[in-house]
Each structure stands twice: as C-alpha cells, then as structure tokens.
Image (cartoon, rainbow, N blue to C red; front, top):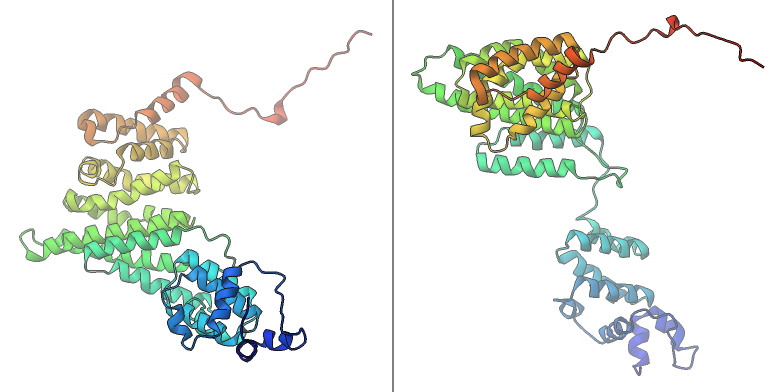
Length: 383
C-alpha cells in the first residue's frame, strides 16, 4: 500500500517511529482486519472524521477504534469515541462496546463514553430509597392501564436472573414489608369505612374501587415476596388479619374477591412448596380466610380471567393435606356440607377429601414404632 510518509508520520506515532528506521517501508505482521487498517489509513487524509464516521455501523467503528489505538492514531481514536458517545446502543452492542473498551488502554479518553453505563458507588440504603420510590409510585398510580403496565415491567425486572452480577443490588425485605404494611392499613381503613357508610352514599362506590385496588396492590407485593423467598412472615401477618376477615362479608363480592385472591395465592405457593411455614401458620391462614375464599370463589372464577380455578383448588387441597389429621377432618367435613349446598360456586376439594378418606378408613397408619421398645430375638445357628 503506497501512502505519503509525511501524512502518516504526522497523524500516527507508530508510523512516525517506524518509517524513519525502516527505509520507508512498514510491515504489519498481525493484521486481523485488513479493511479496517486500509480505512484507518484513509482517515488520516480526512479533515472531518466526525462526518466520515456518520452512518457507520457500531461494529465497524469498533474495528476502526482497535486499529487507531494500535497504531496510535490519536485523532482516529477520539473520532471513534465521539461516535460511540453520540449514537444509541442496543444491550447486545453495549456488552460488545464495553468488552472492546476494557481491552484498550484509553482510560483518560473513556469517561464521556462510559457515562451512560457507569453508576456511582451506591449503598443499599440509597438503592432501597429508589426501590421504595418506584414501587410506591406504582401502588399509588392513578391511571389503571399505566399502573398495570408498570407492575408487569417492574415484576419482570425484579425476576430477572442476575446471578452472574455479584454486585447486584436488589429490593430489600424491609422495603417490601414496609409497603405491605401501608397497603394493609389502607385496606383496613377502606373496609371499615365501607362497612359503616350508607349504601346510597356517593362515596361508597369510590371506597369499593379503592378496596379492590389495595387488595390488588397486596397481591402484587406478595407475588414479589414469593419470588424473592421473603414471604414466610407475610403468611402469619395475613393469618392474623381476623378483624379484616370479619369486615369482609360486609362488602359486595364484586369488590372483595380481590382480597380472597391473596389467600388463594398463598395456598398455591404453599402447595408448590415455595413457602415453608409451621403447621400452626398454615392452619391459622385457613382458619382466618378459608370461609371468605369459599364465599368469593364463584365470583372469582367468573370475573377474573387471571385466576386458574384448578390451580386454586390444587393449592387448597395440598395445603389442607399438610395439616394434622384432626384439622384435615374438621376442614374437609365442613367443606363436604358446603359443597353439597353450593356446588360449583364452592372450590372442589375432592382430591384432598379422597386422600383424607384413605388415610382415615383404609390405610390407618398407627403410631410410629418407638425404636426404644423394639425387641430383637437372638438365636444360635447350628454349627
């Protein structure tokens, strides 16, 4: 390739050092991208490098950047970095760009390019403040469509597998329970107000909408708690809401069924083994909320397409069967009578009933052998 020595020596320290001592001939031994080398040499003759690079593909500019850095063509390096700073990157391109820049010793020149991806060192308290602001904003959103969209977005981002990022910052247990507590207090207030207000009052309709909204908010937070494996404490908190459950029947079913979705959600997770809590917590959960779930089940399966009736019934069956036999019997005999009266408006717990029946009347497991009372007979074999 024939070029002007002066032009190359002025623009590149590599050529300035090598052209003088090699009789005007420089051989590039390791050249992975010949086209990039040729183009970079051509760039040395260009007066407006920014204009030259406009419209190029990012991958192509990264190739030019590597060559410019290798031959110490400072103007080319600056032009490539200015290009990278100005154009948008896809997430895949971002990984490629950061990988290339990481291998080039251009520390002083990279600050502007990397500003879009580098974050300042942050503490967990600062991150929690951001999470609290974002989650709290979603819970208080006025536009239902935007609220639903942002819930889906935030849930997906929190659920992403970031196991390869050891310095990942995540929403804390304390932040989630703080928000749960606020929603529960709001729900309790709305239920109390609605239960005591005159049915003809104009405010009653607004309260009903607010009840459904707060219950839906709790459902969303519990979904996050389950994903993060923080939900064990909430099972007891929900089981202790006896005053809330006593107010539940005073609200029209079309609004209150969102509350029963929370109970169904917890039972489904217990049935899948995603929640590990004591038998007392499991029984208290059912003792406080099972009747309400029975009352709302018919409306739930008709009004909410997001509810899988079979999944709810399976979760209830499995949760009941984790309890001691006496508690299984009390729950299932009561369900039996209710199902005969209500039919499909009551969850079908037949699978749990069948297992309880066999345990009670067929298999009849007795007390486990006490090892200390086991007797061993010893005899001598004839020689």
